[in-house]
Length: 107
Length: 121
Image (tube, rainbow over all chains, first blue to last red; front, side, top):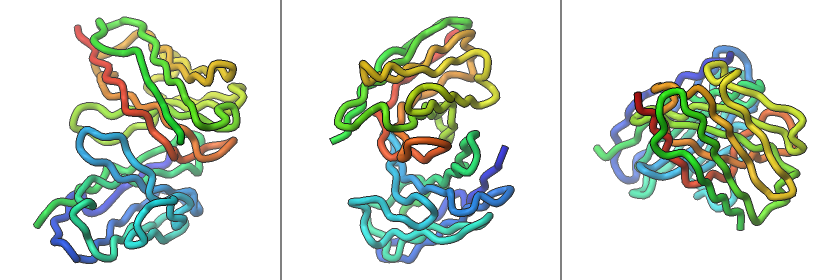
């Protein structure tokens, strides 16, 4: 199975900060990589698919990049609604795998 | 608007066999891969199983292979997860999630509200 890692595991930031989360795959997943946002007690929400395609309705301050084994999710200017946990997920293989998550909290 | 209504689960004895259901509306159900994803208390997301649009291909995470069965009834726009031989480590919230593609492995673009399954010994 393809293993996914994320760094950092927790990130403390202030409103307006630029935030970058890194996701790494144990082998190439090309650009078959999605990012999700999850708030406590809620279902995950898809933000980005195919590494960099922003889903409809997702604010433009979110962006994704990368290919192969290294990917990043960037929030250009952190807003109060963005405090949440973020997960990457590869869908290159039929055995889907998620990263362990990155919690973004208030500094 | 895509809506997903999940049911089943609850408190189940170890070794029990509940069936989860997920009724999907607002989309041509048979056109999309469907996924089950779970989240144990305080833990991250874990993929459980996927099924192709026509139901002819199914895939499972290793720890549930041989115990869980995913299926779908496209005439009822309903996804199922039959869970057998439940163990304590199966305790989690189970999410029904619509695939964002019509075949192959896929991300999930719409998610249900989640069904808690608690396995008691």
